[in-house]
Image (cartoon, rainbow, N blue to C red; front, top):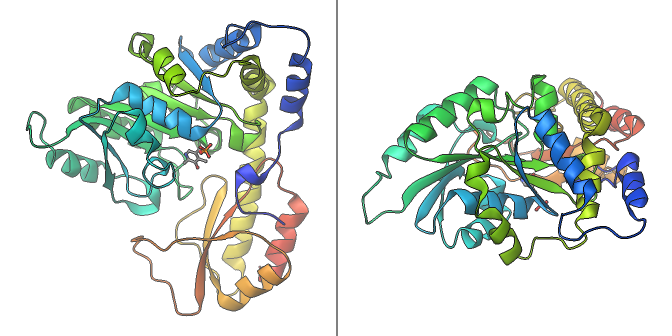
Length: 349
Ligand SMILES: *Cc1c(COP(=O)(O)O)cnc(C)c1O
């Protein structure tokens, strides 16, 4: 019973099948292949605009390249203080930008509030030579706490950033999970809400290793071919990235997977909310459930072989009681419904 992360899952079968089918004969290297061309065409159709697409194998590479395209070495990237770019990428954004500074903004459930972004920007006036220059805003959708920005919230934050001369990046490692929650068009949750560059995740939602950097204004993408190659992320047998992304998108496979993951999480959240002594700090919105569990519930789950992570307590405006543990449970397209039921039963929900 594994609820550690959505990347603990394997590869979803249609994507694996597509990679097998791609494994025939020769094909042009470095992304000049028909599978990559198909992925690009699908992404442009799904996002209802011509996007510049850069496929890479990890989300860290996608984020770092995206920020590298938006931010000079003397720039500042504003992001949530617990953002993946801030805490989980070993300084890759700093390296790929040539030394830009990341500025953490506080906010509940991993979300940045408009007034807090405005205040953070005010503290970094442009043109003041002693300070790094605001260059980018990075928003995680869904957030590292499994929360989802509404399209209106994204548009408001982007407008503040654009007015201050910043580019806007979205870390969409869980883009599909957030999208199915909002039930809106991909364009509405991205470029129509002011997102300039998107890290579009596929790995956590069924691919083997594939993410796309999408640049919505192709004129702003001219440095990325060089940045990707220079950083060692231009995959020579690129057709296997193209095949993954195309299979991910075809026939709405990505949305089916995300809906499945979200439904498991919804079931889990409802079950835990009923469990004696358990409580959720904020509503479940995508495929991650955060919960305070009584110590004895936690012990019973672990003794029964349920795996999940203890989560770091933050300045969430929540207090942990003496006998409580704070945990994160993540579901995926591959989660078993019976595992969810077993977990809920073990917790007494
Ligand atoms: C998983 C994740 C990534 C990508 O991580 P990699 O391990 O580099 O693929 C990026 N952002 C968020 C919010 C994530 O959860």
